Image 1 (spheres, protein in one colour):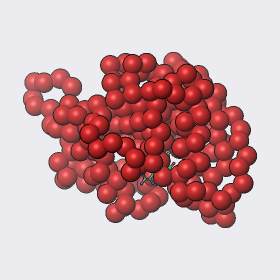
Image 2 (spheres, rainbow, N blue to C red):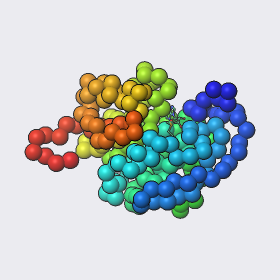
Image 3 (cartoon, rainbow, N blue to C red):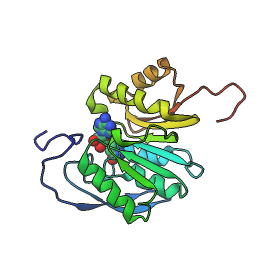
Image 4 (cartoon, rainbow, N blue to C red):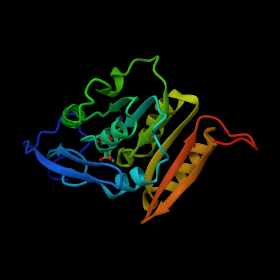
Length: 208
Ligand SMILES: C[S@@+](CC[C@H](N)C(=O)[O-])C[C@H]1O[C@@H](n2cnc3c(N)ncnc32)[C@H](O)[C@@H]1O
């Protein structure tokens, strides 16, 4: 990629901020994006599917967005879960700045915590994790990333990940199962899977 990878820590490409619309049945936001971040010019198709398919966030109290980019998932989560603290992490400094600015523009700057991954306090757990994860960092790094954050789910917490089928969603689901995280395919649309990953198995007869 001539203009660098979106997951660089500090993109060198010249900044050119612009508006991006996030339009969903329940939420419409006009946010700011920039060059040097993932899906800089529009809401990513996979991210949109994730936001369309996930169960209600109304009761969530602490949400984590792994790889927040310019913040579409973070900002929609903050809107849908007006009581929740939303933690948004990314290695890309420009993405973090955008996500923080966008959260601020929604009036949610006090409960949206945008951080570099190492700057999240160790004692915080999450009842919901949402992510369009950085598949392109490669399988070993992706696995390390998930094994770092999934143990931070509360006991009855749940993670939703969107992954393209041709980028290995089904093998990722199998791998997660093998690591002890019950994983089901919540939805399958337009070449994407929404994986639902739990911290602990649901016993027969229980409801989620
Ligand atoms: C597929 S993009 C999704 C961005 C945004 N959530 C969206 O839906 O538009 C994945 C993001 O993960 C970030 N990322 C890469 N490695 C990471 C890591 N180790 N920890 C946290 N974020 C990471 C990238 O910089 C990128 O912004």
